[in-house]
Length: 285
Image (cartoon, rainbow, N blue to C red; front, side):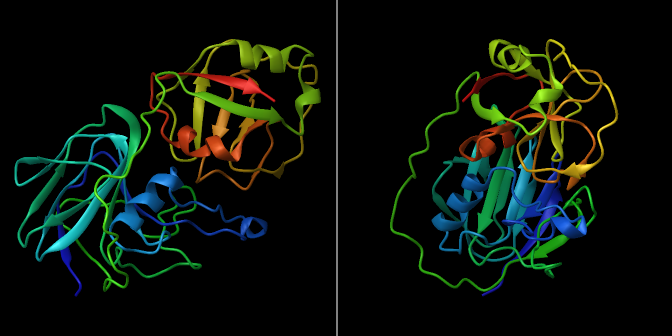
C-alpha cells in the first residue's frame, strides 16, 4: 500500500536520491545519486527495498515528516538524533511509523548526510532512468519544501529479520586513500608528498558537486591552459589557487583544472560525509 508523507519541515537540504544515472557522461549528464552510496543501500535493505530504491538524502539538518499511514523506515549515514512522536528512535534499523506519526531529524553530530528509506521506496517520475535530484544539471525532483507531499511505491520485498545493523563509527580525521592522477606531472615533484603530509580542512563552500579543501598551496610546474577533459567521481582537481577540490556525485563531466590525484573507490562514501570545518588527510598509494 502506498503511503503519503507530508513535509512539515524540509531541513537544510533534503533531496531524493537513488544510485544515479551511470553511462551518460558523454552527453554531459553526471551520474549523481547518493553521495554516500553504502548508507543508501543499507537503509533500503533494512526496509526490504532493492538497494537502488529512491530514498531521502538529508544534509546536516534533517526534515520533519508526517506519515498518513503505517510505514517502515530506516535511517542511516551520519550520526543524528531522530525522534518519532517525540521519542528517540535508533539508527541503522527498521522502525515502524504509525499512521499519523511524526518523524523528526535534528542536526548531525558527526558526518554530513543522513538517509531515510521507506518501505516501497519514494515514488517519483524517473528521468533518464533515475529518480535522483541532480543539483548541477537540474535533472530530477527539486529539493523538498515545507508543505509538499511525497508518496511511496508499493513494498515489494520481505523485511529482513534483523535488529540493528552494525556500522563502524567514522574516524575523527578521515584518511582517504588516493592514487596519482592523470595530470600529476603538472605539479612540482613534491606536490603529491605535500598532499599526503598535510592536514586539510573542509571549506564551507563545499556541496554535492565537490568538497573544497583549505590547506597549503600545491605548487604547479605548468601554468598554461589545460583543455577540458573527462572527470571522474573522486578526482582531485587543483585550480589556480592551489587548493584542491574532491569531485562528488553531482560533479561536472568535464573540467579544465589539472587532476593531481583520485580518491580510491572504497573511500568515496567517506568523502561524501565530509562536513565544513572537518579535518582530513590523504595517503598516496
